[in-house]
Length: 247
Image 1 (cartoon, one colour):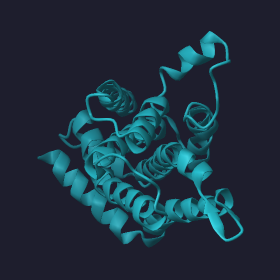
Image 2: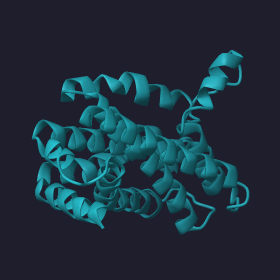
Image 3: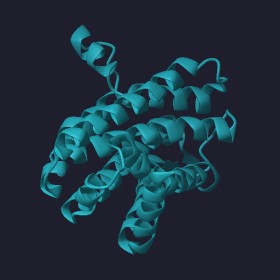
């Protein structure tokens, strides 16, 4: 119940921040539109979108992950800078209720953002999709939830927005290497093993299989379960860090 109260307050604050809403909803769509213009080749009046369509599932996974991480991390850090989080520390609310409340509050807008990106990709840019819309959305939301949990975790470490931005080269940039857009079959084993502890390969692979090969949920259940584990683990870690900061 107390988590829902926190979630309601967080959602109200985000709703009142029009610049954050614009960045959250319009920036990913703008980037997808720009990439479609760059990657689609037109020759003799015939459009060849094969390169863009092939990369679209991987781009979708990465952009959802990146923007959710960035916005949730900055918004949560702002709560600390403004002293809102400290006021919660002296209340009877537990650390996990705080994390869950922020997760639910951000999650409402993350869900809207993810649905908008997916609708734009499928119905405006007309990227082929061989799977059910809701199954594809499930994977996207799990990937977004993972990014949201990581964003809260990183912002619990950071003291300033500049420190949070420094997590991007460590947490976000390496994800693109394993997002499926590059051939990494020839890389050393330790690099492949590193990809196993990152959420991007699982989300990207699941989306690619769904959109390009018409697979069912049974074929990607492993990726889905791994993403659920990531969400849980990062939420627990964020709770532990907040508990340490509270002490």
